[in-house]
Image 1 (cartoon, protein in one colour):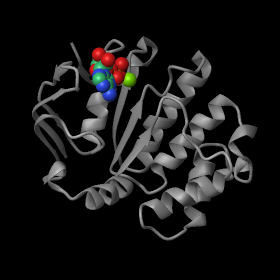
Image 2 (cartoon, protein in one colour; image 1 turned 120 degrees about the horizontal axis):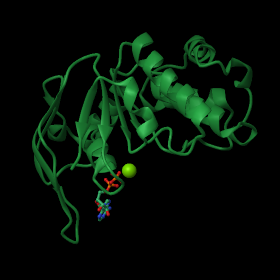
Image 3 (cartoon, rainbow, N blue to C red; image 1 turned 90 degrees about the horizontal axis):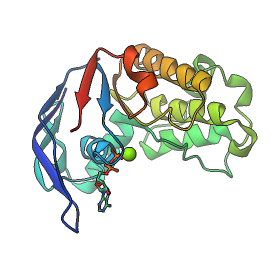
Length: 209
Ligand code: ADP
Ligand code: MG
């Protein structure tokens, strides 16, 4: 489904990271492991079309993504890739429902409130649908981030250190939800972390030196 071939990236200033080749098959659940500064976020950005690497090729379902126009790439990302960041990035002036509707609209999809309710229910936060982000706890906000990432049923679900700002109980819950949501939505899952608490839940690991 995704292949990474001979990819390396050099930031202005000369810091260069070379990535070993990687083949991710449809429905796989991968852990991307590496110390802080090893290049996890860089690699996730490269995989999801956010950062064009200085060399090499990234293919998603046979499409060489950096060959697309930027408009085509934006829409491809909105429809096919859901991203969960370390800290939730939600729009504070919009309710939880409207944050999710906005994600539908960004992908060029019609508003689908049934889907919003379905996702919030499966994440156990349907009672928060009219609330605003600042009325939720950190763990609830991370659930909304997951909701937003899966709302358009992406084929690829990516999470960048989703548990590192959470306590053990919330970290375990968020991990469970990611695995469950990738299963329900038949999405491929890649979770980047340096959090050793996460390791046991995955069979596939890609390690950065
Ligand atoms: P990780 O997510 O594993 O902590 P990053 O991918 O964020 O690692 O960073 C990898 C390396 O690239 C680090 O040494 C970092 O300083 C460097 N780096 C990241 N972003 C930039 C940037 N925008 N400009 C220059 N160097 C960067
Ligand atoms: Mg990072």
